[in-house]
Image 1: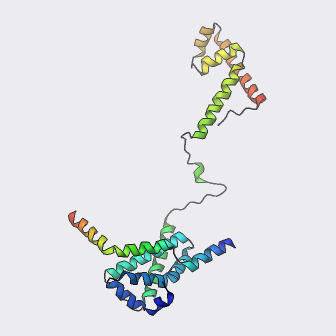
Image 2: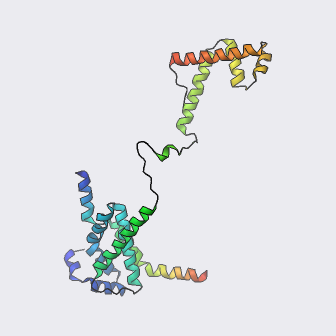
Image 3: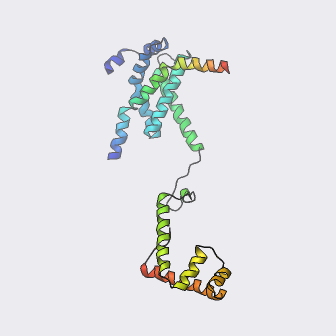
Length: 44
Length: 197
């Protein structure tokens, strides 16, 4: 019963908030990181 | 974030806003669809951490596509994201099948063949205890046997050298050593001492 409750809980709640925060942070700094990566490639 | 607020804005509108630079629109899209997408992934992989990894990877692909301006499925955002997550789930199972897996059974465990011979604190303690017990037992031996045993074990002398120093024949020295070992074994049994690690 505990096990079923555990699985059900994950079905309802979705991912942990930290996962969403990571995605949003990735999005926020995407352009900046892309630019820095390109600059690094140029300097190589 | 209120669910009613989320439903007021269409996916296509939120996607466009996000492409134009509104980071909040992505957050709205995620909150709007997170349960459907996550539950779909979780229903396949049945592991919370893996499901979260795939969920994250899905949105990383979404972000890359939208930010690079190559998204062209207006109005079908959710089905597009679900397709990405579905492909990632397939990739996950392909990778996990390719990787050699080994599961230990009751009869066979690979870790029984992988041993670490470095003495740990517990082994050192046991070793010290064994040495102490043995030294105590040796003190109980008759003097002539104790003498031969000490010379042989702790001073690493040959039986020829022992015979010369103690003034007996080599055979007598060997005999005393033999009796010393027999007596030690007897004492170990009598006192029920464990001399192994």
